[in-house]
Length: 115
Length: 113
Image 1 (tube, each protein chain N blue to C red):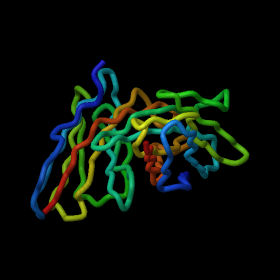
Image 2: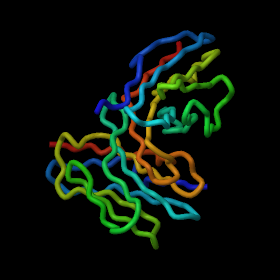
Image 3: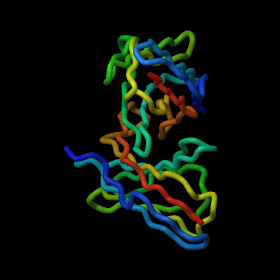
């Protein structure tokens, strides 16, 4: 079974630009969540989607948004990029809710550098 | 709210030595506990998880962890490490109304020859 696939793996953007990251979950998984990883803040939850609906959102500004398609694939978008948005963005998928103890499986991440 | 504290940010050990990576959690409800490993330039890979039942959990690559409710700990152990175990290890908690995984800051395990 293929794992969580994220594209692109690496990208460099300029301040003020926007970026879209893509995620294909494990086949059959309907829950997709996104995390941001930085050296200073560690791993922080961005949002979670289930059946095309955003179920939960972390404490990030409105510049961070996402969506999920009918085939469970997900995208996240960051508008008006700031230097502090430089991070590893990790997508994860799960067959059920995290609060019920379901395991979430991570992709290899998208490295975003804002210059 | 749930929280996780990984007591050591870095743990250097020699090859074939035993290692323990410490994790303490805080939660007012029953928890589910996880250990993930992150190799350089990669995502997170699940090592093991505790949901219920036996407090000693065995995972991949020879790792095991013990859930201790009274001490609110979930320490990760391996009796003999290899160079290839060099990576960052994250402890995480979920459960109750927590809809996300809450991670610790990570422990960088460096195995030296």
